Each structure stands twice: as structure tokens, then as C-alpha cells.
Image 1 (cartoon, helix red, strand yellow):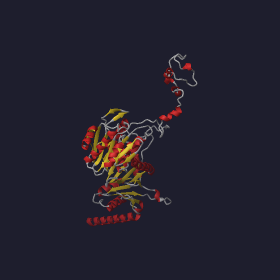
Image 2 (cartoon, helix red, strand yellow):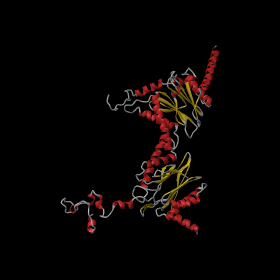
Image 3 (cartoon, rainbow over the protein chains, first blue to last red):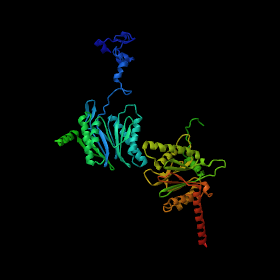
Image 4 (tube, chains in turn purple, yellow):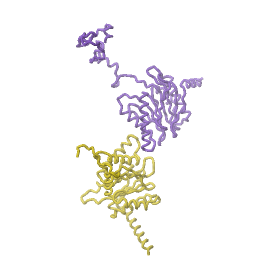
Amino acid sequence: MELFREAGFPYKIEGRQDDRRSNNSTTGRPRCPFDEEDINSLMPINFGVIENKQHFQNEGGPGPRIKMNHGTTTLAFKFQHGIAVVVDSRATAGSFISSRTVEKVLAINQYLIGTMAGGAADCMYWERILAMHCNLYELRNKRRISVAAASKILCNLVYSYKGSRLSLGTMIAGWDSKGPGLYYVDSDGTRISGNLFSVGSGSPYAYSVLDTEYRWDLSVDEALDLGQKAVVGATFRDSASGGFINSYIINADGWKHISHIDCFDLIQKYNSKKK
Amino acid sequence: MTGRYDRAITVFSPDGHLFQVEYAQEAVKQGTCAVAVRGADTIVLAVEKKAVAKLQEERTVRKIVQLDKHVVMAFAGLHADARVLISRARVECQSHQLTVEDPVTVEYITRYLSQIKQQYTQSNGRRPFGVSCLLAGFDNDSDIPRIYQTDPAGNYFEWKANAIGRSAKTVHEFLEKNYSDDIVAERKGVIKLAIKALFEVVQSGAKNMDVAVIRKGTNLEMLSQDEISSYIKIIEKEREEEAQRKKGGGR
């Protein structure tokens, strides 16, 4: 307010006396802009709030048009020997790379894992709550929880917060009595079972590699290679993906961490193959 | 008496008994008898059917009820209390299927009912349920038949064969003497044993018996009056033969 006045803008509050705003007013103490009850007093005189709020609003619906950075590439697919899960490890805050060693795969228990995409805090917190529920289920019922049930618990939890702007795009992958299970769960309440998923800002790039070369009858090495190639392709073009590529395989014995490779090394490897 | 229900009805006695729960168990003993026998691949529930009054419609008196497609229950005790439990159990069976995408196991729904019963032994202003239940069925992923029994205290146990209600002790002793894995290996054997056990108490025969046969994958089968009568005829004949043999041997 004072800044506007100092800068010479024609500043006027409707319906108020000028001297009430001055520092030397009869009320004594200097006024702080945030004391104002009328929000319009913080705006320039010809700033039409109603018209201009369009700029900040989401065309699709309510809420401000804030671009959430779901900066990541995660993928998982079922094949004849189980489930392959490959993720990157970059975390970004705007254009700042805040970490290149994030663990984007969260172990729920020995045979169930969840991937992380979207808000890191949301994913970590809710997947830990999910782990708690899975453990309680196992204690109460003396049997492992199915992947369907685990993903449904997460989905129902997150759905009850719909509208509170949680940001979660996770894949629940695991092995149960029905064999391999893979579900995509997100904060909208979506829950889909499928053979192949990729989640995150780099997922279009990953999908293009995966969809070209995916087959059910891959060997374990071929599957890992395909997954790594897909994530590497995504890190190559997506600025929000990068760091280390972590690969996991899930089979009847549970999940196992296979490799932790710097994406740059992989790119060099593929480039050297080209020559 | 205060307006608010802040005083528990079920409190401990000086010597460690919960009398309200024990009285509830007495109420169960007044109810009509129910027997459950488990075989290799068959479960049979046989219940005593009280004679209905002349003007009463018989089909409204049902003591064998389905909780889900694969779980059946027979009870002894207060019918009205049982109705409440059955209703809650049926909802829970569906609710479980909704959240876990799997049908309930017999143990799960037994545990659920037991928890409700136990809550009513530890709540203000409430009395325990005067019902004992026999739950029978097959779990979704197994071929093993299961029978569980709950009591008004909220205890539950798994049984190979058991009886609740009127003269349950007599029937139970009979079952202990006569149950063997060979006898119950076949469907017919299980049915015969269950009817024979109930026959110890229900002397009047087939018109006062309801028999249900449960097998994996098939719908619940209620035996007709004629079928029950034919089993009873066999049982009575065997009894006569046994009596003749004893008479002959004692000479």
C-alpha cells in the first residue's frame, strides 16, 4: 500500500478518508496493509478482481491453476516370471533438482511394494499407513493380504480425501494366492488392474518404448532390460526424471531389488551399442 | 433408576463370574437343539423344529439361515436376538467382499459375530445376546469344511461336530462316542450321523427335523421330509438289530 503510494500510483480506497491511512493519523500507530478488512484495498485502483481471476483459475473446474510437478518416471509390468518394477530417482522443486537419490519404491511388506509419483510426502505417508493396515490384516486373519485388497484399502483411504488436493499416483505390485497382482491407484480414486503401467511426467516417453517391445514371454533379463531402457528414454527427454534407475522383480518369493544404475551410465551403454 | 444408561448390567460377581452371561447361556439351553457334523467334504446341519401351532405358517420359523453364498448358520436360543446377529453378519459379509474383493472366510465371520457378542457383555445398559450359533461353510480358496460355534460370552471354537440348545450335552456325548473319520468319509455317512445324533433328542421323527447339507461349490441343500424319514427308518432298523443282538448275546 505504502509502496503504491510512494511509487506514485493513483491509490484510493473507496469510501475511506485518506488521513485514516496515513501514519500520522489520529489513531496513532502505523497501519499495516494486512490490517485491512477490505481485500480490495490491497489491489491497484483499476484492477478488476472479478475479471482477472480468470487467469488464476482452472478451466476444468474449481481450484487455482497450479501446475503440480509430478516429476518422475515409474513403470511396472507383469510378465511370465512375475512383475518388473523400474523407477528413476529424481526429485524436483520447480527447476531445482532437490535430490537425485530418492527411493521411489516403498516396501509395504515382503511381497508387496508401492511406487511413488506425485507428491512425495503424500505417497510416503499413505503407503506407510497402508503397510500398517496390511500388517493388521495379516495378524487378524493369519493369512497374507491380497494385492487387490491392499490396493483397495489405499484407494478408499485416498478417495475419502478427494477434493483436499492430495497428489498420489502409485502402482501397488505384489504376489498373492492368485499370482502376480498390479494395480494403479491415484488420488482421484482411480484403481485399475492391468498388465503394464507407467506413471509420472516421463510416462509418455516410457510408454512409447514399452508398448513397442513388451511381450508376455520375456525372460527376467529381457524384462529388466526393457524396463531400464524405457526409464532411460524418459530421463533423456523429461527434465523432471533422472538420477539412478532402480529395478525390482517380484515373484512368488517376494520382491527383490535387482540393480541401482546411474542413468547416465546406461545412456552411455546404449550409445556405445549404437556404434 | 437413572435416565442415562451409565450402569453396566454385566458386572463381575465376587467369585469371578459374569452372571448375566451365564444366564444367557441358560437361555440358550432352553432353545431347540441344533447339531452340526463335519465330514471329509460335506457338512450337515440338523435342527429340531418345534411343532407349529395349527394356525401358524410353518415357513416363517427358520432356524437354518444363509449368511452368504458359502456360509450357513444354525442357532439356538432367542430367535429375536439371532435375527439381529444374522442381519449384521449378512451386511458384514457383503462389506468384506466390497473392501477386500474376496468372500469372507468362515473364521472371519465367526470372529466378527463373537466380537459383537463380547461387546454386549461389556457395555452400559445392554444385556448379552441369548444365542449360540453354529456356523458352517467352506472358505473360498480351500476344500476343507469348517464348523465354528459361538456362545453368548463371545467365545468361539472350531469343531468337528457339536450340538447346542436343548439336551446338547446328551447329543454331544453321543457324537463323541460315535464320530469317526471313517463314518463321515461319505456324504450319506455324515447325514446319517447328524440325524442319528438329533434323534437322541427329537424322538418324534422327521416332521420335527430340518436337515441342511453343505458341499463345496454347490448351493445349500435342504433335505425333504421323505428323505429324512428314510434315514430315520434305517436308523430305527439298526437300533432294533442292535437290541436283538444284545438280547441274543446276553442269553
